[in-house]
Each structure stands twice: as structure tokens, then as C-alpha cells.
Length: 254
Image 1 (cartoon, rainbow, N blue to C red):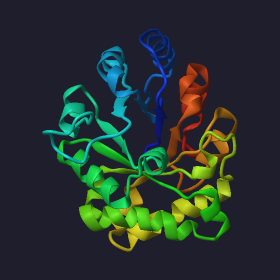
Image 2 (image 1 turned 90 degrees about the vertical axis):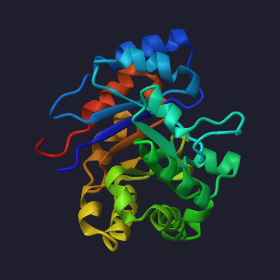
Image 3 (image 1 turned 180 degrees about the vertical axis):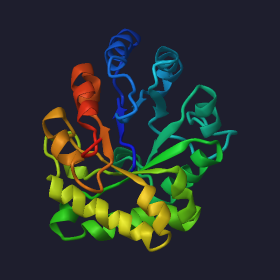
């Protein structure tokens, strides 16, 4: 059975004082054998301090982005090796905000995916469609194109050490979210695409849902067969809310 993963993406929020308070609340969720793996992704400048606060708490540390290059003259960028050096085990690549606001192409995201794995990090590859694309009936085309870019560059075997996240752009920070059935439909589509390349790896791949995940809808979303947890944005900044989402992350019978 695939173990749930609940990842908190703090985006560009936080301060040293606010982070300390939030981490103390999140640590109360702890890790349990029958519970989800828990991950937090603070802004770059807080990674080291938050990582030290999480030490021995059983909660993983991740970054929100990574440079596709291994190092060198790339002012303002952060290499995968640097993230690993400060204790990260995961990194988000291809978040819709990176794609939309900073013009990241499918090919650049795929290179970041490879760069992360080269340094032993587990990439969380984000895919998702805009409202206009969904209304035009292009959801499958868009999410499969984004997935295929990583498969083509890294190979299907790379997904044995990766996580996929479906985040409908129209549901991010809007208070709207895909219905459980809508989420399941896309998650199943993504799993089927990888299964055509490698059925064993596809069956083990964790696919998260991201898009206004909150305690009120987490139970229904996580009950879907191909939903293996959540990539949580705004709700991850509220310790109690985030703990409740983690509590909802149980497979039936777990």
C-alpha cells in the first residue's frame, strides 16, 4: 500500500518567530506507523533553521524550487546539492506559480526534476491545467504533456524516486477545489500514462492532490483510490488545520 504524504508548501510566507510557532504546532502531529509521511517546504532562507527545529521530530524538510544547473555563475539560484547539504530530502518542481509567473517551460521543469534526483532529492513534480484549459476540454492534453516532458528526459524508471502532484491551477488559492471525482479522474489518467511505460513503478507512485486542500475536504479527497495525500498551500500555515489534514490522511482500513 502506498503511504500517504502530506506536504506543506509555505510559499513566500513566514518569519523566524512565525516559523518557530508553526513548527511547534506541526510537531504535535508527529509521525506514526499508520499515519502519513509529513513534509514542510519553507522559503529558502529559513530551510536551515526550520530543519534544525524539525530534527528528531520525524517530519521531512523540502524546498519549493531548485536550479536546473549543478552550480556556478547563476546569481540568485540554489543548486540541488546545496538543498541536500542543509537537510532537504524533497523539492517541489514545476509548481504552477513557477510556470505561470516565471515562465518555466515543461523542458526546464524536467531538467530541474533530473537535477534534484542527481543529488539524492525526491522531486515532487507538479502538473495542472488552468480554468480556460479545463473549460476547453484540454485537461488531459495539458497534464499528460507536462508529465511526458519528465518521462522523456529522465525515463520512466526515475519515477520510482519521485512524487507527482496534480494541482488544478483554477483551484489554487481560490477557495475552490476539484471534486473528489474530478481529482480521481486526473490522478487515474496520470497513473495510466506511467503504467504504459512501467506498470510496477506506476502502481507504487504517490500522486498528491493540490488545490485549496483543507481539513473540511481532505477526508473525501483522500478516500479516492489514486489520491495519495496532499500538497497543501494556505492551510499549511495554520498548525491546527495542517494537523487535521494530516489526521485525515489514512487509507481505508489503515
